Length: 179
Image 1 (cartoon, rainbow, N blue to C red):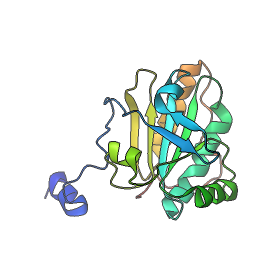
Image 2 (cartoon, helix red, strand yellow; image 1 turned 45 degrees about the horizontal axis):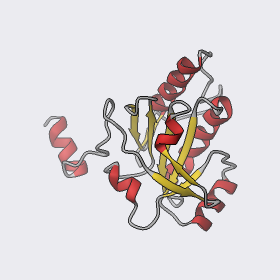
Image 3 (cartoon, one colour; image 1 turned 60 degrees about the vertical axis):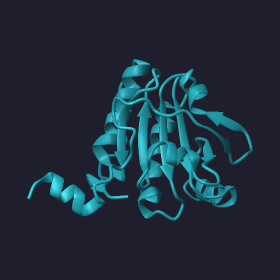
Image 4 (cartoon, helix red, strand yellow; image 1 turned 30 degrees about the vertical axis):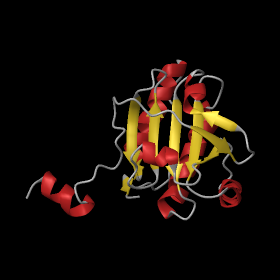
C-alpha cells in the first residue's frame, strides 16, 4: 500500500487546495469586519502576502492563528501583508479576533465562500504565502510547523532581515495538526 492508497483512503482522492506551490493564487476582493474592501492584488502591490483561511469554531485554526499573529508582529509593515479570511459572519469573526488578540485584517468570505471556493479548499486552516508575482510560495493545510517556519524565512529574506522565531524556546509545538 503506497501513498496514493493512503491519500485516497483519507481524502477520497481530493487535493486539499488547488493552489499548490508555484501556482498563481486567485485574486479576491472581500470586505473586512469594518466594512472596508481589501483585495489580494492590492496587498501584493506592497509585497508578499500571508493568507490564512479559517473558521472560528475550528480548534486547529484557534491553535494556528496566534502563530500567524506572532509573524505579523515581527514582520507586518508596508512591505508584507497578513490577511485572515474567515468563513464566519462579522460578529463571530470580530469576537474571535478579540479573543485571540489578532491585529491583522479579518476578511469575510461571505455567502457561498467565493474566495475559499476559488482556492478549492477542502479544509481549514489553510495558510499560504503568496509572492509579489502572485505565485504561491508556501501552501499548507492544517497546522504545519515547517510551513510557518518557511513563511517566516521567506518574509525575512524579502525584507533583508534576520528570520524572526515563530516558536519560542520552551514551547512544546507539534510538527503537524490536521485541519
